[in-house]
Image 1 (cartoon, rainbow, N blue to C red):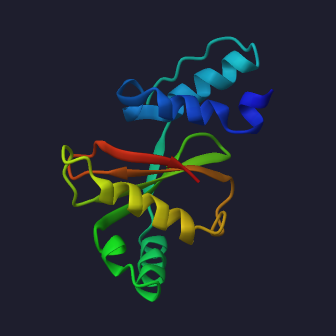
Image 2: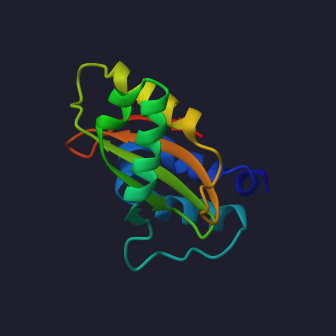
Length: 145
């Protein structure tokens, strides 16, 4: 029960790394079925639905400018909501950063986003994680919200 209440299945999908990266929602669904001791229900297509939210990105950028962190928001090209279940989602920030240099900027970007985040921003459900993605779409950093 704890797995579902505290977002444990979403966390497990995130920790699965590259194995789950393309469709974390499938991993979450499999975990939820396992926790519920439900029969295995293999998806017929991708489960994770991603939608961009330019308005939320602009609100984050405006906040960053008022905090003297405009550079943080300027590196984000796309903010996407990755809907993992009916109630859980991750926020993905696509940046102009490249993998390899350790990317301390990606961690500070995630922390800035979390400092700005005030809960659900009018969305149904619960945001579980913020992921910072590089220009190639690969994860540079992930942090719980």
